[in-house]
Image (cartoon, rainbow, N blue to C red; front, top):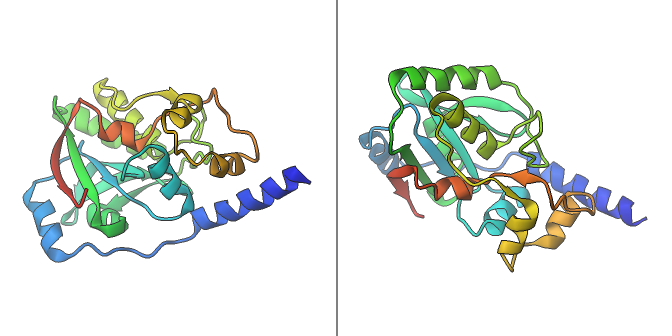
Length: 219
């Protein structure tokens, strides 16, 4: 009976996670600042996505950010962000990517050791190879599926051999924050948190010493 209750609640949370959230619609003045900052291929873009699951990602990691993508191309007057989202990896114009962020919160960060042209081409090639790969709702670093921070980490590492973010277990992640919503995560994982599973978070990538800030807003 208890397992059935957890399954019902987790199913409801999954439905909510899949639901389309309203876009914040970045104002023209703010986006003009983004354009003036001259984003580039290889830049890592952090945002805050709404909904119950991603709000818990932010609160658990004690950070404002809950989603991350990487610029891999420039087409038709806008930069192209590759991202792992529900249900799968896709490419999104930067303006649209930023539009989805709550309260227009974003940060665009660049590798201090900037990628070469060859490495930038490798990023695009990697992103293209991942298009359509399904999202790991278990945030499992070893899964054949992927998720936003795993995808960005792999895109950077495969092309530049630079490793951004911290690989950590759920045990370390959840017990580092005394206010972590453990009840939510127990429900999300059908009653049993995979304590020894390794993952990587947008927050740890945001704090990576390998990145420098290009532009940010309301964070």
